[in-house]
Amino acid sequence: MTQATMIWQYLRFDQLTTTRLYQILKIRQEVFAIEQNCVYLDADGKDVYALHVFATIDDELVAYCRVLPPGLKYPEASIGRVLSSSAARGSGAGRALMEYALTVCTELYPDSGIRISAQLYLEGFYSSFGFNSCSSPYDEDGIPHIEMLKP
Image (spheres, rainbow, N blue to C red):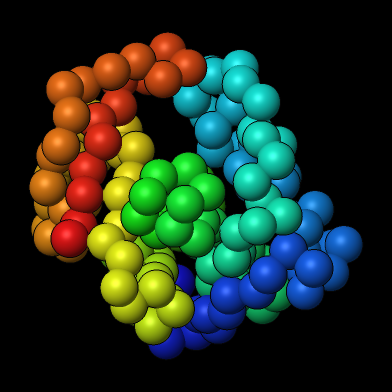
């Protein structure tokens, strides 16, 4: 799997087809509920306000995150629900996803920083994009997290 074959998009909730929305919800359940053995309410009411950022290969979702506008979750814009499909892991899809999501945030919210709630074990990954830890570790749904900010 190469990044060159990935097709990148971002869409508002009302632009998603029902098939694409189903793919998004399915992969989020696979990664965050099943793989991480975590029971939580994924449908948190924020998806309708989010930009859904994703890559596909042959119309299959391989990387996804959502971008929330400033003021919805944090004063800053936020990137969350970051994932790569199991088939795409190790291919650089996660890094490419963050680069694309950061470009989207910068273009749409140029006067806003970006705040994330990162799984603690990924702190180094997000630091490589210029995020700085700005909280003590905390538990979110049984998984250690840390808040990080990119000014």
